[in-house]
Length: 143
Ligand SMILES: [Zn+2]
Image (cartoon, rainbow, N blue to C red):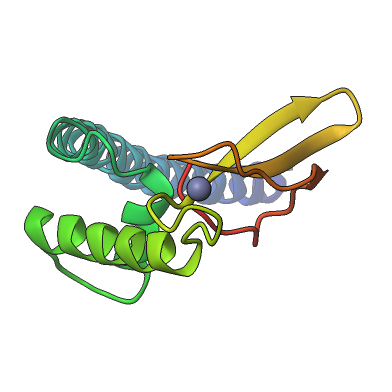
């Protein structure tokens, strides 16, 4: 009878030790999560500030252009993005130069219809324009 009780006591104290160890582990994990959350909050704030900084300085450059720029670069300056944007706009203007008046270029006009996005191109200088076509993401041009 008493032997049995000793056995029970031993088992209970072992279980208590296990619970203590698990609680300690949970405490460490909770602290890690808390630290990660605070790091994320800091990163998020920094990211918001960066986005605002870029947005204020590159008002006519789309966010896609900025993302494209950084896809193959680790760092970059606002002026570099601006230059890449200007160069691509210039080469697009040259590529879509109007052959009716030779003064303007065909601007891309995208239209949201009930059956999906469509587009046509219209000269910035004369009445020249193309027919309406279905828009896909690889349609290029100056909007
Ligand atoms: Zn034209």
